[in-house]
Length: 194
Image: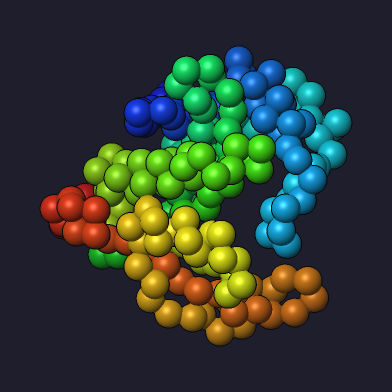
């Protein structure tokens, strides 16, 4: 059994990575510009990421989706099939919460074209309608202004600061919590199904 969800927008397709995506995926990562700000990884050494490595990545992503642990989407341009980045929705808790965390990354050579907003909004919509989450949150460093702006533009609401939430760079750091629930995007709430 495979997880084959596909989300289409005006310009994008969000879908699980497939082994046939290797060249587009590699081109996306290898085409990155130097680091643009502290939270941009910029150019990374991906020389170890051969086809066998990518095949295992695809298999791991399939396994975590089938176990309802994490849903990883490649973000592709509909017109060219260029790999623009990645989005994932990871289950934090099902039962009465139906709660997930959202992660997103657009390769920096594709910034400032609206791809991030379009992809995040589509992932939120799918998270609510297809994956039955009721609450999806993003956890963002306090000074990551680009990520904060993206979360807001996609319809997420600022909720709180989680103090000393994540251990980064040899210290515990605070994070903003931005969250969305179905009504924030005009979707009717439903009771838990999983």
